[in-house]
Image 1: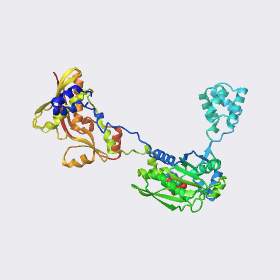
Image 2: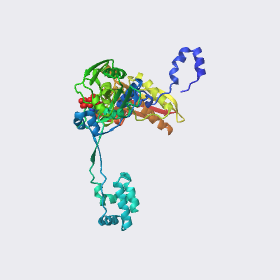
Image 3: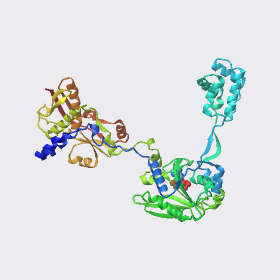
Length: 526
Ligand code: ATP
Protein backbone atom coordinates (compact mmCIF):
# COMPACT_ATOMS: atom_id res chain seq x y z
CA UNK A 1 0.00 0.00 0.00
CA UNK A 2 1.05 3.68 -0.23
CA UNK A 3 2.74 4.90 2.92
CA UNK A 4 3.59 8.25 4.48
CA UNK A 5 7.16 9.04 3.40
CA UNK A 6 7.49 11.99 5.78
CA UNK A 7 6.38 9.91 8.76
CA UNK A 8 9.07 7.28 8.08
CA UNK A 9 11.67 9.95 7.38
CA UNK A 10 11.06 11.62 10.75
CA UNK A 11 10.74 8.37 12.69
CA UNK A 12 14.01 7.12 11.20
CA UNK A 13 15.77 10.13 12.67
CA UNK A 14 14.36 9.76 16.18
CA UNK A 15 13.67 6.02 16.44
CA UNK A 16 15.56 4.04 13.80
CA UNK A 17 14.75 0.62 15.34
CA UNK A 18 11.06 1.47 15.58
CA UNK A 19 10.95 2.67 11.97
CA UNK A 20 12.71 -0.49 10.86
CA UNK A 21 10.33 -2.78 12.75
CA UNK A 22 7.33 -0.86 11.40
CA UNK A 23 8.33 -1.90 7.87
CA UNK A 24 5.83 -4.79 7.52
CA UNK A 25 2.94 -2.43 8.34
CA UNK A 26 3.10 -1.03 4.80
CA UNK A 27 2.52 -4.43 3.20
CA UNK A 28 -1.08 -5.02 2.09
CA UNK A 29 -2.15 -8.36 3.59
CA UNK A 30 -2.82 -10.55 0.56
CA UNK A 31 -5.93 -12.63 -0.03
CA UNK A 32 -5.24 -16.39 -0.21
CA UNK A 33 -4.93 -16.14 -3.99
CA UNK A 34 -2.20 -13.53 -3.50
CA UNK A 35 0.04 -15.92 -1.60
CA UNK A 36 2.69 -17.99 -3.41
CA UNK A 37 2.39 -20.64 -4.86
CA UNK A 38 -1.09 -19.55 -5.93
CA UNK A 39 0.33 -16.17 -6.88
CA UNK A 40 2.87 -16.62 -9.64
CA UNK A 41 3.92 -15.23 -12.96
CA UNK A 42 2.80 -17.89 -15.33
CA UNK A 43 4.81 -18.59 -18.40
CA UNK A 44 2.68 -20.16 -21.10
CA UNK A 45 3.84 -23.65 -21.94
CA UNK A 46 5.66 -24.11 -25.19
CA UNK A 47 5.09 -27.33 -27.12
CA UNK A 48 8.29 -29.40 -26.95
CA UNK A 49 8.18 -30.33 -30.63
CA UNK A 50 7.58 -26.79 -31.86
CA UNK A 51 10.18 -25.55 -29.43
CA UNK A 52 12.71 -27.98 -30.90
CA UNK A 53 11.69 -26.90 -34.39
CA UNK A 54 12.23 -23.24 -33.45
CA UNK A 55 15.68 -24.03 -32.10
CA UNK A 56 16.59 -26.07 -35.18
CA UNK A 57 15.50 -23.25 -37.48
CA UNK A 58 17.60 -20.80 -35.50
CA UNK A 59 20.59 -23.12 -35.66
CA UNK A 60 20.31 -23.63 -39.43
CA UNK A 61 19.84 -19.92 -40.06
CA UNK A 62 22.83 -19.06 -37.92
CA UNK A 63 24.92 -21.39 -40.08
CA UNK A 64 23.93 -19.60 -43.28
CA UNK A 65 21.34 -22.07 -44.56
CA UNK A 66 18.40 -20.53 -46.42
CA UNK A 67 14.97 -21.76 -45.41
CA UNK A 68 12.84 -23.52 -47.99
CA UNK A 69 9.45 -25.16 -48.22
CA UNK A 70 9.63 -28.32 -50.28
CA UNK A 71 6.78 -30.18 -52.00
CA UNK A 72 4.59 -32.45 -49.87
CA UNK A 73 2.71 -34.20 -52.68
CA UNK A 74 5.02 -36.59 -54.49
CA UNK A 75 4.10 -38.52 -57.59
CA UNK A 76 4.65 -42.28 -57.27
CA UNK A 77 6.94 -42.11 -60.33
CA UNK A 78 9.27 -39.76 -58.44
CA UNK A 79 9.65 -42.30 -55.68
CA UNK A 80 10.83 -44.80 -58.33
CA UNK A 81 13.22 -42.24 -59.80
CA UNK A 82 14.72 -41.47 -56.40
CA UNK A 83 14.74 -44.79 -54.62
CA UNK A 84 15.24 -47.10 -57.60
CA UNK A 85 14.84 -50.76 -56.59
CA UNK A 86 13.92 -49.69 -53.04
CA UNK A 87 10.85 -47.81 -54.22
CA UNK A 88 8.43 -50.68 -53.65
CA UNK A 89 9.48 -50.89 -49.99
CA UNK A 90 9.22 -47.12 -49.58
CA UNK A 91 5.81 -47.02 -51.26
CA UNK A 92 4.60 -49.65 -48.83
CA UNK A 93 5.08 -47.04 -46.10
CA UNK A 94 3.54 -44.03 -47.79
CA UNK A 95 0.04 -42.63 -47.80
CA UNK A 96 -1.51 -42.35 -51.21
CA UNK A 97 -3.77 -39.36 -51.64
CA UNK A 98 -7.38 -40.38 -52.21
CA UNK A 99 -10.72 -38.72 -52.53
CA UNK A 100 -14.34 -39.25 -53.38
CA UNK A 101 -15.20 -39.58 -57.05
CA UNK A 102 -17.93 -37.35 -58.46
CA UNK A 103 -20.86 -39.55 -59.43
CA UNK A 104 -22.58 -39.56 -62.77
CA UNK A 105 -26.15 -38.85 -61.70
CA UNK A 106 -28.99 -39.48 -64.12
CA UNK A 107 -32.36 -37.71 -63.82
CA UNK A 108 -35.33 -40.02 -64.48
CA UNK A 109 -39.03 -39.15 -64.35
CA UNK A 110 -39.28 -41.12 -61.06
CA UNK A 111 -36.62 -38.93 -59.51
CA UNK A 112 -38.34 -35.75 -60.62
CA UNK A 113 -41.58 -37.10 -59.14
CA UNK A 114 -39.79 -37.94 -55.91
CA UNK A 115 -38.44 -34.36 -55.76
CA UNK A 116 -41.96 -33.04 -56.43
CA UNK A 117 -43.25 -35.13 -53.55
CA UNK A 118 -40.75 -33.42 -51.26
CA UNK A 119 -41.13 -29.85 -52.52
CA UNK A 120 -44.91 -30.14 -52.89
CA UNK A 121 -45.00 -28.80 -56.46
CA UNK A 122 -44.39 -30.62 -59.78
CA UNK A 123 -40.99 -30.23 -61.43
CA UNK A 124 -41.52 -28.85 -64.92
CA UNK A 125 -39.29 -29.65 -67.88
CA UNK A 126 -37.27 -26.44 -67.71
CA UNK A 127 -36.48 -26.99 -64.03
CA UNK A 128 -35.54 -30.64 -64.73
CA UNK A 129 -33.21 -29.35 -67.43
CA UNK A 130 -31.57 -26.87 -65.01
CA UNK A 131 -31.10 -29.60 -62.42
CA UNK A 132 -29.46 -31.86 -65.00
CA UNK A 133 -27.08 -29.06 -66.04
CA UNK A 134 -26.21 -28.42 -62.42
CA UNK A 135 -25.37 -32.07 -61.71
CA UNK A 136 -23.39 -32.25 -64.95
CA UNK A 137 -21.43 -29.14 -63.96
CA UNK A 138 -20.67 -30.77 -60.62
CA UNK A 139 -19.41 -33.94 -62.31
CA UNK A 140 -17.18 -31.82 -64.56
CA UNK A 141 -15.76 -29.97 -61.56
CA UNK A 142 -17.24 -26.57 -62.49
CA UNK A 143 -17.86 -25.88 -58.81
CA UNK A 144 -16.78 -27.38 -55.50
CA UNK A 145 -18.63 -30.12 -53.70
CA UNK A 146 -19.63 -27.81 -50.87
CA UNK A 147 -21.43 -25.55 -53.36
CA UNK A 148 -23.59 -28.38 -54.72
CA UNK A 149 -26.45 -27.81 -52.29
CA UNK A 150 -26.63 -24.13 -53.10
CA UNK A 151 -26.41 -24.70 -56.87
CA UNK A 152 -29.20 -27.28 -56.70
CA UNK A 153 -31.35 -24.97 -54.61
CA UNK A 154 -30.99 -22.30 -57.33
CA UNK A 155 -31.79 -24.82 -60.08
CA UNK A 156 -34.87 -26.14 -58.27
CA UNK A 157 -35.92 -22.81 -56.81
CA UNK A 158 -36.20 -24.27 -53.30
CA UNK A 159 -34.52 -23.73 -49.95
CA UNK A 160 -31.05 -25.23 -49.18
CA UNK A 161 -32.58 -27.26 -46.33
CA UNK A 162 -35.00 -28.94 -48.72
CA UNK A 163 -32.11 -29.78 -51.08
CA UNK A 164 -30.30 -31.60 -48.27
CA UNK A 165 -33.40 -33.74 -47.81
CA UNK A 166 -33.64 -34.32 -51.60
CA UNK A 167 -29.98 -35.34 -51.82
CA UNK A 168 -30.43 -37.75 -48.97
CA UNK A 169 -33.54 -39.49 -50.25
CA UNK A 170 -33.57 -39.09 -54.05
CA UNK A 171 -29.84 -39.35 -54.78
CA UNK A 172 -28.51 -42.13 -52.51
CA UNK A 173 -25.42 -42.46 -54.75
CA UNK A 174 -23.90 -39.45 -52.98
CA UNK A 175 -24.06 -41.23 -49.65
CA UNK A 176 -22.69 -44.45 -51.06
CA UNK A 177 -19.57 -42.95 -52.61
CA UNK A 178 -16.38 -44.82 -51.76
CA UNK A 179 -13.00 -43.04 -51.78
CA UNK A 180 -10.57 -43.82 -54.58
CA UNK A 181 -6.81 -43.42 -54.47
CA UNK A 182 -4.62 -41.48 -56.84
CA UNK A 183 -0.99 -42.22 -57.66
CA UNK A 184 0.10 -39.18 -55.65
CA UNK A 185 1.73 -39.82 -52.29
CA UNK A 186 2.43 -37.74 -49.19
CA UNK A 187 6.19 -37.41 -48.81
CA UNK A 188 7.71 -39.92 -46.42
CA UNK A 189 11.21 -38.38 -46.66
CA UNK A 190 12.19 -34.75 -47.18
CA UNK A 191 14.54 -36.08 -49.84
CA UNK A 192 11.58 -36.49 -52.22
CA UNK A 193 10.96 -32.75 -52.00
CA UNK A 194 14.66 -31.91 -52.31
CA UNK A 195 15.07 -33.77 -55.61
CA UNK A 196 12.14 -31.83 -57.12
CA UNK A 197 13.64 -28.59 -55.78
CA UNK A 198 17.20 -29.32 -56.93
CA UNK A 199 15.95 -30.10 -60.45
CA UNK A 200 14.64 -26.53 -60.70
CA UNK A 201 17.42 -24.59 -59.05
CA UNK A 202 20.81 -26.29 -59.06
CA UNK A 203 22.10 -24.58 -62.22
CA UNK A 204 20.33 -21.25 -61.71
CA UNK A 205 21.95 -20.18 -58.43
CA UNK A 206 25.45 -19.63 -57.15
CA UNK A 207 26.98 -22.79 -55.72
CA UNK A 208 27.17 -24.09 -53.09
CA UNK A 209 23.44 -24.04 -52.37
CA UNK A 210 22.73 -24.43 -48.67
CA UNK A 211 19.09 -24.88 -47.80
CA UNK A 212 17.05 -26.35 -45.01
CA UNK A 213 13.46 -27.16 -44.19
CA UNK A 214 11.87 -28.38 -40.98
CA UNK A 215 8.54 -29.84 -41.92
CA UNK A 216 6.19 -32.78 -41.77
CA UNK A 217 6.67 -36.21 -43.30
CA UNK A 218 4.08 -38.97 -43.34
CA UNK A 219 4.58 -42.66 -42.76
CA UNK A 220 1.89 -45.30 -43.08
CA UNK A 221 3.13 -47.04 -39.94
CA UNK A 222 1.02 -50.09 -39.14
CA UNK A 223 0.64 -48.73 -35.65
CA UNK A 224 1.84 -45.70 -33.76
CA UNK A 225 4.11 -46.63 -30.87
CA UNK A 226 6.48 -45.06 -28.38
CA UNK A 227 8.93 -43.98 -31.11
CA UNK A 228 6.76 -43.84 -34.24
CA UNK A 229 4.03 -41.42 -35.29
CA UNK A 230 2.09 -41.46 -38.54
CA UNK A 231 3.25 -37.93 -39.16
CA UNK A 232 6.51 -36.61 -37.78
CA UNK A 233 8.80 -33.66 -38.46
CA UNK A 234 12.06 -33.92 -40.28
CA UNK A 235 14.76 -31.28 -39.99
CA UNK A 236 16.54 -31.67 -43.29
CA UNK A 237 19.14 -29.76 -45.25
CA UNK A 238 21.07 -29.98 -48.47
CA UNK A 239 24.43 -28.63 -49.56
CA UNK A 240 24.85 -28.78 -53.33
CA UNK A 241 28.24 -27.89 -54.80
CA UNK A 242 31.10 -29.20 -56.90
CA UNK A 243 33.38 -29.86 -53.93
CA UNK A 244 30.91 -31.44 -51.55
CA UNK A 245 32.26 -34.46 -49.65
CA UNK A 246 31.16 -36.44 -46.61
CA UNK A 247 33.05 -33.94 -44.47
CA UNK A 248 30.27 -31.49 -45.30
CA UNK A 249 27.91 -33.78 -43.39
CA UNK A 250 30.23 -34.02 -40.42
CA UNK A 251 30.70 -30.27 -40.25
CA UNK A 252 26.97 -29.53 -40.56
CA UNK A 253 26.13 -32.17 -37.92
CA UNK A 254 28.56 -30.65 -35.46
CA UNK A 255 27.47 -27.06 -36.15
CA UNK A 256 23.80 -27.90 -35.81
CA UNK A 257 23.93 -30.24 -32.86
CA UNK A 258 26.34 -28.20 -30.78
CA UNK A 259 23.44 -25.70 -30.56
CA UNK A 260 21.61 -28.36 -28.53
CA UNK A 261 24.42 -28.94 -26.07
CA UNK A 262 26.07 -31.90 -27.78
CA UNK A 263 29.77 -31.68 -27.25
CA UNK A 264 31.37 -34.61 -29.07
CA UNK A 265 30.47 -36.47 -32.23
CA UNK A 266 31.01 -39.91 -33.71
CA UNK A 267 30.26 -40.87 -37.27
CA UNK A 268 29.38 -44.42 -38.12
CA UNK A 269 28.59 -45.95 -41.51
CA UNK A 270 24.84 -46.66 -41.61
CA UNK A 271 23.95 -50.29 -42.20
CA UNK A 272 20.84 -49.20 -44.08
CA UNK A 273 22.57 -48.06 -47.31
CA UNK A 274 19.60 -46.33 -48.96
CA UNK A 275 19.83 -46.38 -52.73
CA UNK A 276 19.36 -42.64 -53.10
CA UNK A 277 22.72 -42.15 -51.35
CA UNK A 278 26.11 -42.87 -52.92
CA UNK A 279 27.63 -46.12 -51.57
CA UNK A 280 29.75 -45.66 -48.41
CA UNK A 281 28.40 -42.17 -47.70
CA UNK A 282 25.31 -42.89 -45.60
CA UNK A 283 26.45 -42.06 -42.08
CA UNK A 284 24.81 -42.13 -38.68
CA UNK A 285 25.67 -39.26 -36.38
CA UNK A 286 26.06 -39.91 -32.67
CA UNK A 287 26.33 -36.97 -30.34
CA UNK A 288 27.51 -36.89 -26.75
CA UNK A 289 25.32 -34.85 -24.48
CA UNK A 290 26.37 -33.85 -20.94
CA UNK A 291 23.07 -35.15 -19.58
CA UNK A 292 21.96 -37.83 -22.00
CA UNK A 293 25.27 -39.39 -23.01
CA UNK A 294 25.84 -40.82 -26.49
CA UNK A 295 22.71 -40.82 -28.67
CA UNK A 296 22.00 -41.30 -32.35
CA UNK A 297 20.77 -37.94 -33.59
CA UNK A 298 21.05 -37.61 -37.34
CA UNK A 299 21.85 -39.31 -40.63
CA UNK A 300 23.57 -37.86 -43.64
CA UNK A 301 24.78 -39.00 -47.02
CA UNK A 302 25.61 -37.80 -50.51
CA UNK A 303 22.86 -38.25 -53.05
CA UNK A 304 23.67 -40.87 -55.65
CA UNK A 305 24.49 -39.38 -59.07
CA UNK A 306 22.28 -42.14 -60.49
CA UNK A 307 19.31 -40.59 -58.67
CA UNK A 308 20.40 -36.96 -59.27
CA UNK A 309 20.81 -37.66 -62.99
CA UNK A 310 17.11 -38.57 -63.16
CA UNK A 311 16.45 -34.93 -62.24
CA UNK A 312 19.16 -33.45 -64.42
CA UNK A 313 21.22 -32.42 -61.40
CA UNK A 314 24.95 -32.49 -62.14
CA UNK A 315 26.72 -31.72 -58.82
CA UNK A 316 27.15 -33.74 -55.64
CA UNK A 317 24.59 -32.97 -52.95
CA UNK A 318 24.99 -33.69 -49.26
CA UNK A 319 21.76 -34.29 -47.37
CA UNK A 320 21.46 -34.40 -43.60
CA UNK A 321 18.28 -35.05 -41.73
CA UNK A 322 17.01 -35.82 -38.32
CA UNK A 323 13.70 -36.71 -36.79
CA UNK A 324 12.59 -33.71 -34.72
CA UNK A 325 10.44 -35.83 -32.39
CA UNK A 326 13.35 -38.17 -31.66
CA UNK A 327 15.64 -35.22 -30.87
CA UNK A 328 12.93 -33.70 -28.65
CA UNK A 329 12.59 -37.05 -26.87
CA UNK A 330 16.31 -37.04 -26.11
CA UNK A 331 16.28 -33.44 -24.94
CA UNK A 332 13.23 -33.84 -22.71
CA UNK A 333 13.97 -37.44 -21.73
CA UNK A 334 10.49 -38.41 -22.86
CA UNK A 335 9.72 -42.09 -23.14
CA UNK A 336 6.77 -41.93 -25.47
CA UNK A 337 6.61 -39.72 -28.54
CA UNK A 338 2.81 -39.94 -28.58
CA UNK A 339 2.55 -38.37 -25.14
CA UNK A 340 5.23 -35.82 -25.99
CA UNK A 341 3.42 -34.73 -29.15
CA UNK A 342 -0.22 -35.04 -28.11
CA UNK A 343 0.08 -34.37 -24.39
CA UNK A 344 -3.45 -33.02 -24.16
CA UNK A 345 -4.87 -36.41 -25.15
CA UNK A 346 -3.26 -38.08 -22.13
CA UNK A 347 -3.89 -37.70 -18.41
CA UNK A 348 -1.90 -34.72 -17.11
CA UNK A 349 1.03 -35.12 -14.76
CA UNK A 350 1.20 -32.36 -12.15
CA UNK A 351 4.24 -31.40 -10.16
CA UNK A 352 3.80 -30.81 -6.44
CA UNK A 353 4.11 -27.07 -7.02
CA UNK A 354 1.33 -27.19 -9.62
CA UNK A 355 -0.89 -29.10 -7.20
CA UNK A 356 -0.06 -26.65 -4.39
CA UNK A 357 -1.46 -23.85 -6.57
CA UNK A 358 -4.77 -25.72 -6.64
CA UNK A 359 -5.21 -25.56 -2.85
CA UNK A 360 -7.09 -22.45 -1.79
CA UNK A 361 -9.89 -21.20 0.44
CA UNK A 362 -13.66 -21.48 0.10
CA UNK A 363 -14.52 -18.26 1.92
CA UNK A 364 -12.50 -15.13 2.61
CA UNK A 365 -13.19 -11.68 4.00
CA UNK A 366 -14.05 -9.15 1.35
CA UNK A 367 -12.34 -6.15 2.88
CA UNK A 368 -8.74 -5.22 3.46
CA UNK A 369 -9.60 -4.65 7.14
CA UNK A 370 -10.99 -8.17 7.25
CA UNK A 371 -7.69 -9.51 5.98
CA UNK A 372 -5.86 -7.59 8.68
CA UNK A 373 -8.20 -9.20 11.21
CA UNK A 374 -7.30 -12.66 9.84
CA UNK A 375 -3.58 -11.89 10.27
CA UNK A 376 -4.27 -10.66 13.81
CA UNK A 377 -6.24 -13.81 14.74
CA UNK A 378 -3.40 -16.01 13.49
CA UNK A 379 -0.79 -13.90 15.27
CA UNK A 380 -2.77 -14.01 18.53
CA UNK A 381 -3.94 -17.63 18.50
CA UNK A 382 -0.76 -19.40 17.38
CA UNK A 383 1.47 -18.46 20.34
CA UNK A 384 -1.38 -19.20 22.80
CA UNK A 385 -2.43 -22.45 21.15
CA UNK A 386 -1.80 -24.55 24.26
CA UNK A 387 -3.24 -22.10 26.81
CA UNK A 388 -5.54 -23.99 29.23
CA UNK A 389 -9.22 -23.18 28.89
CA UNK A 390 -11.47 -21.46 29.53
CA UNK A 391 -9.55 -18.59 28.05
CA UNK A 392 -10.04 -15.65 25.70
CA UNK A 393 -7.60 -13.39 23.89
CA UNK A 394 -8.52 -10.15 22.20
CA UNK A 395 -7.07 -10.23 18.68
CA UNK A 396 -8.26 -7.21 16.74
CA UNK A 397 -10.31 -4.06 16.92
CA UNK A 398 -11.16 -2.08 13.85
CA UNK A 399 -13.81 -0.92 11.38
CA UNK A 400 -15.87 -3.37 9.35
CA UNK A 401 -18.63 -1.94 7.16
CA UNK A 402 -18.73 1.27 9.22
CA UNK A 403 -18.98 -0.53 12.58
CA UNK A 404 -16.26 -0.74 15.20
CA UNK A 405 -15.75 -4.44 15.79
CA UNK A 406 -13.70 -6.27 18.41
CA UNK A 407 -12.61 -9.79 17.62
CA UNK A 408 -11.33 -12.35 20.14
CA UNK A 409 -10.11 -15.91 20.01
CA UNK A 410 -11.56 -18.01 22.80
CA UNK A 411 -12.13 -21.47 24.17
CA UNK A 412 -15.13 -21.28 26.54
CA UNK A 413 -15.11 -24.96 27.58
CA UNK A 414 -13.17 -26.14 30.58
CA UNK A 415 -10.18 -28.48 30.66
CA UNK A 416 -9.16 -27.99 27.11
CA UNK A 417 -6.81 -25.68 25.28
CA UNK A 418 -7.28 -22.55 23.19
CA UNK A 419 -6.77 -24.47 19.95
CA UNK A 420 -7.22 -28.11 18.96
CA UNK A 421 -4.06 -30.14 18.28
CA UNK A 422 -4.41 -29.89 14.48
CA UNK A 423 -5.03 -26.13 14.34
CA UNK A 424 -1.44 -25.31 13.47
CA UNK A 425 -1.19 -28.01 10.80
CA UNK A 426 0.04 -26.64 7.51
CA UNK A 427 -0.92 -27.93 4.11
CA UNK A 428 1.92 -29.45 2.07
CA UNK A 429 1.98 -31.31 -1.21
CA UNK A 430 4.43 -34.14 -1.45
CA UNK A 431 4.66 -36.66 -4.30
CA UNK A 432 1.12 -35.83 -5.37
CA UNK A 433 -0.37 -36.23 -1.86
CA UNK A 434 -2.06 -33.24 -0.21
CA UNK A 435 -1.41 -33.37 3.53
CA UNK A 436 -2.13 -31.19 6.55
CA UNK A 437 0.83 -31.81 8.87
CA UNK A 438 2.04 -30.42 12.20
CA UNK A 439 5.57 -29.17 12.78
CA UNK A 440 6.79 -32.33 14.48
CA UNK A 441 9.64 -34.78 14.01
CA UNK A 442 7.28 -37.32 12.43
CA UNK A 443 6.47 -34.99 9.55
CA UNK A 444 9.87 -33.36 9.22
CA UNK A 445 10.45 -35.04 5.86
CA UNK A 446 7.10 -33.95 4.42
CA UNK A 447 7.83 -30.39 5.49
CA UNK A 448 11.38 -30.42 4.19
CA UNK A 449 10.74 -32.13 0.85
CA UNK A 450 7.13 -31.16 0.18
CA UNK A 451 5.82 -27.95 -1.33
CA UNK A 452 4.13 -25.64 1.21
CA UNK A 453 0.82 -24.15 0.14
CA UNK A 454 1.22 -21.23 2.56
CA UNK A 455 -2.04 -22.22 4.26
CA UNK A 456 -2.43 -23.55 7.80
CA UNK A 457 -5.70 -24.88 9.23
CA UNK A 458 -5.69 -21.89 11.56
CA UNK A 459 -5.29 -19.44 8.68
CA UNK A 460 -8.05 -21.17 6.70
CA UNK A 461 -10.41 -21.27 9.69
CA UNK A 462 -9.63 -17.63 10.60
CA UNK A 463 -10.59 -16.61 7.06
CA UNK A 464 -13.91 -18.37 7.40
CA UNK A 465 -14.50 -16.73 10.79
CA UNK A 466 -13.78 -13.21 9.53
CA UNK A 467 -15.87 -13.74 6.39
CA UNK A 468 -18.83 -14.55 8.70
CA UNK A 469 -17.95 -11.71 11.08
CA UNK A 470 -18.03 -9.30 8.14
CA UNK A 471 -21.49 -10.54 7.15
CA UNK A 472 -22.72 -10.07 10.72
CA UNK A 473 -21.10 -6.62 11.00
CA UNK A 474 -22.88 -5.55 7.84
CA UNK A 475 -26.13 -6.28 9.70
CA UNK A 476 -24.79 -4.48 12.77
CA UNK A 477 -24.39 -7.71 14.72
CA UNK A 478 -21.66 -9.59 16.55
CA UNK A 479 -21.24 -13.33 16.10
CA UNK A 480 -19.33 -16.40 17.15
CA UNK A 481 -17.80 -18.81 14.66
CA UNK A 482 -16.54 -22.27 15.55
CA UNK A 483 -14.50 -24.65 13.45
CA UNK A 484 -14.35 -28.07 15.11
CA UNK A 485 -13.16 -31.32 13.57
CA UNK A 486 -11.83 -31.31 10.06
CA UNK A 487 -12.91 -34.45 8.24
CA UNK A 488 -13.18 -33.00 4.77
CA UNK A 489 -11.27 -30.05 3.28
CA UNK A 490 -14.48 -27.96 3.38
CA UNK A 491 -14.74 -28.43 7.19
CA UNK A 492 -11.71 -26.22 7.57
CA UNK A 493 -12.61 -23.83 4.74
CA UNK A 494 -10.13 -25.42 2.32
CA UNK A 495 -10.91 -25.71 -1.36
CA UNK A 496 -9.10 -28.13 -3.65
CA UNK A 497 -9.73 -27.29 -7.30
CA UNK A 498 -11.68 -29.96 -9.12
CA UNK A 499 -8.88 -30.86 -11.54
CA UNK A 500 -6.52 -31.43 -8.62
CA UNK A 501 -9.07 -33.61 -6.79
CA UNK A 502 -9.46 -35.59 -9.99
CA UNK A 503 -5.70 -35.98 -10.27
CA UNK A 504 -5.41 -37.13 -6.66
CA UNK A 505 -8.15 -39.74 -6.98
CA UNK A 506 -7.14 -40.93 -10.48
CA UNK A 507 -3.60 -41.49 -9.26
CA UNK A 508 -4.69 -42.95 -5.93
CA UNK A 509 -2.79 -40.29 -4.04
CA UNK A 510 -3.51 -39.38 -0.45
CA UNK A 511 -5.64 -36.43 0.60
CA UNK A 512 -5.45 -36.02 4.34
CA UNK A 513 -6.59 -32.73 5.80
CA UNK A 514 -8.20 -34.22 8.88
CA UNK A 515 -7.76 -33.30 12.50
CA UNK A 516 -9.22 -31.50 15.53
CA UNK A 517 -9.00 -27.75 14.88
CA UNK A 518 -11.33 -26.33 17.56
CA UNK A 519 -11.04 -22.63 16.87
CA UNK A 520 -13.65 -20.28 18.27
CA UNK A 521 -13.66 -16.66 17.13
CA UNK A 522 -16.16 -14.13 18.46
CA UNK A 523 -16.96 -10.60 17.41
CA UNK A 524 -18.68 -7.75 19.21
CA UNK A 525 -19.93 -4.48 17.82
CA UNK A 526 -18.91 -1.59 20.04
P1 ATP B 1 12.82 -46.40 -37.66
O1 ATP B 1 13.88 -47.45 -37.93
O2 ATP B 1 12.93 -45.77 -36.33
O3 ATP B 1 11.43 -46.85 -37.99
P2 ATP B 1 13.69 -45.40 -40.12
O4 ATP B 1 15.10 -45.83 -40.03
O5 ATP B 1 12.77 -46.15 -40.98
O6 ATP B 1 13.10 -45.24 -38.66
P3 ATP B 1 14.38 -43.14 -41.64
O7 ATP B 1 13.70 -43.39 -42.93
O8 ATP B 1 15.83 -43.37 -41.53
O9 ATP B 1 13.61 -43.90 -40.51
O10 ATP B 1 13.98 -41.68 -41.13
C1 ATP B 1 14.90 -40.78 -40.57
C2 ATP B 1 14.51 -40.37 -39.18
O11 ATP B 1 13.15 -39.92 -39.15
C3 ATP B 1 14.50 -41.49 -38.16
O12 ATP B 1 15.79 -41.71 -37.63
C4 ATP B 1 13.61 -40.93 -37.11
O13 ATP B 1 14.30 -39.99 -36.33
C5 ATP B 1 12.58 -40.23 -37.92
N1 ATP B 1 11.38 -41.05 -38.14
C6 ATP B 1 11.17 -41.94 -39.10
N2 ATP B 1 9.96 -42.49 -39.00
C7 ATP B 1 9.35 -41.91 -37.92
C8 ATP B 1 8.08 -42.01 -37.29
N3 ATP B 1 7.16 -42.85 -37.76
N4 ATP B 1 7.83 -41.27 -36.22
C9 ATP B 1 8.76 -40.41 -35.74
N5 ATP B 1 9.97 -40.26 -36.29
C10 ATP B 1 10.29 -41.00 -37.37
